[in-house]
Image (cartoon, rainbow, N blue to C red; front, side):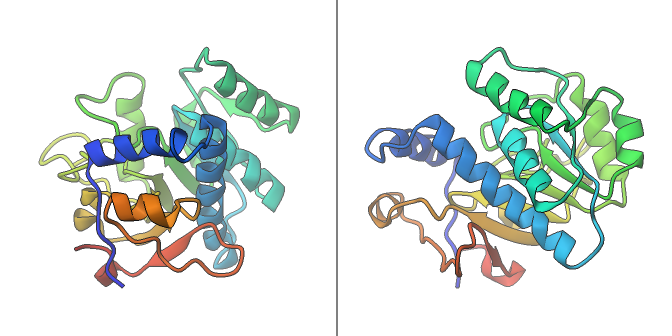
Length: 232
């Protein structure tokens, strides 16, 4: 099954559509996205012994994923250097604090004591230069041998054109990618395990934006797409 991709403008419009005609709240969309990411992360645990996860984030999807990973039996740690003043993000962070999930400031030390990293720093809306404190984080991500799951886009990648030609992020290739709602054009440059998480998208909205909702199985919120099936 070949899945069509949607570009940055269409992805932004799709998000707005989900919250208008689709009647989803931002809380719901973050919860569904984070749940999908956590299920993709769970697949590593089923095939290995990855118990100590490190969630690196800037936004809300990673906070939700960390909560679900905890309830699956992981021991997640969260690197969240720039906390948002948004009430929703503050509530999501409070939920993690109530579970005694540690927030860490020392990223180099944290990555040395983890088994699996969730890269939820930047999503499809990223553009421009990577700003502090994230250049050192992305440098560490592209140098580590740990499995990494990136959310929607490997951080530092351009949504349309993939990794930078040179410099920071140019050699960053995560182990897995979770495309939210639908794959973005950067998947044409991605060679790892590819999951799609968008089971909540209605057929009418998918038709309007000209992409397919893949066949999800059972209660799964993600479906894995083979590398030969992900571009069109």
